[in-house]
Amino acid sequence: MLSRSERILENIPVGSLGIIPLLGCEELGNKVNDYLVKWRRESAHEHKNDVAFSGYEKENYLINASVPRFGSGEAKGILGESVRGKDIYLMVDVCNYNVTYSLTGNTNHMSPDDHFQNLKRIIAAVGGKGRRINVIMPFLYESRQHKRTSRESLDCALALQELVRMGVDNIITFDAHDPRVSNAIPLSGFETISPTYQFIKGLLRNVKDLQIDSEHMMAISPDEGGTNRAVYLANVLGLDMGMFYKRRDYTQIVNGRNPIVAHEFLGSSVEGKDVIIIDDMISSGDSIIEVATELKRRKAKRIFAAATFGLFTNGMEKFDKAYEEGIIDGILTTNLIYQTPNLLSKPYYINCDMSKYIALIIDTLNHDGSLSEILSPNERIQNVLQRYKNGETI
Image: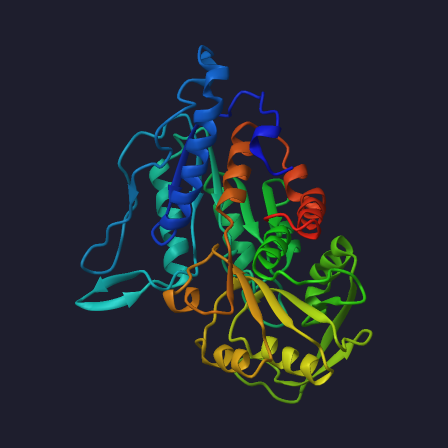
């Protein structure tokens, strides 16, 4: 179960816990910190006189760190307190374009490159004094550049190797575009986590009349690359599964990619069924809306789109239109990356909070515990489904 109180955390902590949410990740970092403070306050009496648990209970696990910039735009990482002997968890949101800095009087929005550079600056400021360095990077930097198809750089592999060379022991990410990129650092800790449980919980909390069986619901993958997500969702919910194949025009290249000619559907009839489209990210949103439109043409009932990362790079207008036209009934994404106030205000948007899950992962790793039970949410999903069917509050 996900409840922290039901787990046995008897291992001595690797070191005194320290969390450093980088610029742009403060809100998520504060939520994670609040959970850890609460949990450890409740259990601190068990280890009150144990020297190995010195500094176990604190009012705050956040470490004071900053990355000021010179007028030229160059920066440096600064730690405002000692981190010697600490088990450090750095949290970074490389997709937070809302963070700005001044460069010769002009306002610049931070790119993923800027955020990754800031991460390296803080690791450099730690200077090898920490007991262990762990990086929580929900959106894996450069994860879409995971394989070579011509004369091109392998940016994700290079970034992972660079972090490991700088002394990072564990890298925690969510829904990596291709988990096989961990082959770049085979001897280091690398976990890619799926938020399927949070999606299911978010949907059940907000939609009260779902009939979760193979006759009334289907799980759909919008492309062949995301089939595993849809297969897992279908298995745990006991649903049928379908997928779309993106037929591309390989005779031309538009914006660096072969344009999609059509979405071909593979699967049984969706007529009269609620549908969950599950993917790793919504970028421009064109594919999701095209898939949803095709499903509506095939007489699907309600359509819910769930994606770990909601980038919405071209704005929300097309989603507003799709919602008004009855093509999409709900969109679920997580708070692992920056969410605009505009997005959070949408009537069709369901926000899936991941802070408790991250706090649980940090707590377990700090105790040198196994993550396998946490990373496999089958039991938790079945529990929440049963509560939903019994009419209980989720």
